[in-house]
Image (cartoon, rainbow, N blue to C red; front, side, top):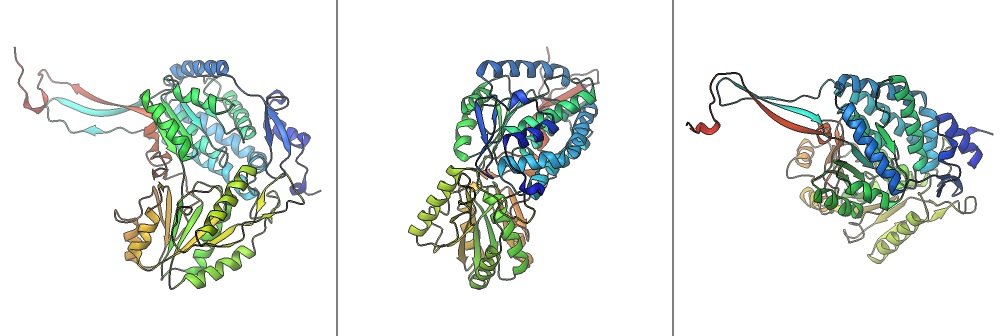
Length: 509
């Protein structure tokens, strides 16, 4: 039997988890059932944490912080480097587990683990580049500078669609900055978190002298996440999820003067201008709209096409959509796997019904393969021609739905794009330099990610990831996102024998 067709029963999953180092007690007889979206079958029952367990975890993280903050940053980077080696060795198995637990195709499961490896490499270099500034001072005989210090335990609340990569964006950076990490994964994807925890334990053992509680996983529901959010001993909370979740988390963290890094919804658009390379655009649209079955926060959801191209581009897309292979995500020939669960399928059908009611013409969107996997939810990706950008188009539905709109003037297209309440990712396909520059200017896209001639998804770790408006304003991964995991101090040193005051103030006795 080929590997892609291997049964997804408890025994095969137990064997995979065993190879990744997860102890059987963690997933055999717990209170949280875990189902694979590939078949809908239960594959494990994970042990959950209670409030007392979370309290012990936070207390242990505080103790770990007291020791870890004193370790030189390059030495912290060495731990992350070793962890990256463990990820490389386990890439195939961890990537498979991601596909099993989320329903991603095999290439995307492996790609997510590669993203973890990449952020480890980035963080290792960063551990020698946590730079402050030397600042000009108006006072003679003085030097002014800024220094950066570890801030404390960082809580990470992750979503199901990127069950390990988003944690790694936070954890690799937080660790080299001197902070422990407490991770509450989605209840839908706890197995991948347990596997990463086991791999990190291997790295700790090889490293030798790090605190034992530098990275902890707590498994549970919303009440556990709320307790983590409310705890003043956890100064940073990085939360990925819906805008609704962010509206709850943000104020609660702010109320205790904590720091929230919010990565929330995205209703991402692409503008296709008259000068666009249509073949290139079609390829980009296809991956961005149907990759991960439309369950990326950066998935393409709105396609805004110049009226001169609309019919031609739609015909090309319809042909491309007709060639998409839907099915077992572990089969290398598959391009689109299942939705995560029945609730996601119901939300998709409700959105398509609303689109029809608003005058939309829907192609696709129906359930498929139900006879083979009655407990799973596979769908044909939907193309929806809309007469206008109605309420349903401005609502983010986490499913492979692409709304197609027309435009006549670039200013109007940008206004359509920016009308969405979220502001995560955006793109334009054009070979007109003026159009590209306008799109990237202050008068262009209002998103945190603004691309030209590539789709809105597939961000690299070297750039800061995040968005504006209802996307939450948080930034993770590259660039200077590390500053969110540290506290800044402005230092002034007087090496003279005088005491001049700033602003020319005289205060002599």
